[in-house]
Length: 320
Image (cartoon, rainbow, N blue to C red):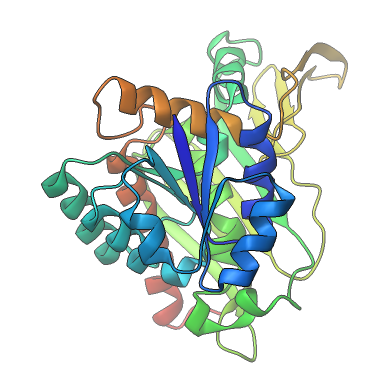
């Protein structure tokens, strides 16, 4: 099946390498706002067709799936363009800027009867089920607390600090922490608390978010655009704890008892880049005539966007 990529930036390059290494997908076309950039990208990644506009890419009926790799601020616009041309869409996270935009795009996809999914890779990876199986085994007993973090020194990157490009830590890295918690504790939280430090440009530079659950569970996630965090996710239980080495791309799962002895170690299967799982599932869903992902249903994308709206609402109420 033929995949087209919209946008020719860094993440598009990773996806291009990934698809070229897959046996069950063909990298068919690249679309950029600049034809010379599209041609250069096509040469680098051996792509047969290069388009100098997103409209030309969306008009190509030979494309089975378009992967959208543009900045967050343009996801709504670019998804709308592709869907209106009848293209199936896999859009990079964060899905949109807010839930209102997401709802409009989901409604349009349903109207046009095309496949639509958010490409948050951790939802599709085998590590997700591996983590859940360890938790469900009861090896550390009942879990009451979860912590996770994700931070990179990216405050110099233009799209990160500019509000008109939907910048900030929350949409870029915070979405991973929120998804990590929701995947493993569920969506039935009762209350959110959050603290934030804003940048001079008006986007969030770093924050902490605490989720309170009705059964006494609590989860805390922290994100930043200033420093490099250890990226760990930790589940704390009455019989020990589970450490996930990197919530953004888990490679190992380690279980410790209450005396800090390692009692179980799991390695996540080797991968091309990790992006292959979202492509593979999207193409399989399209083959089956389904209109959304099983790993990241549209309801979950809408929910996560709503969570981030709620968090930003707390900031706007004057939390420091």
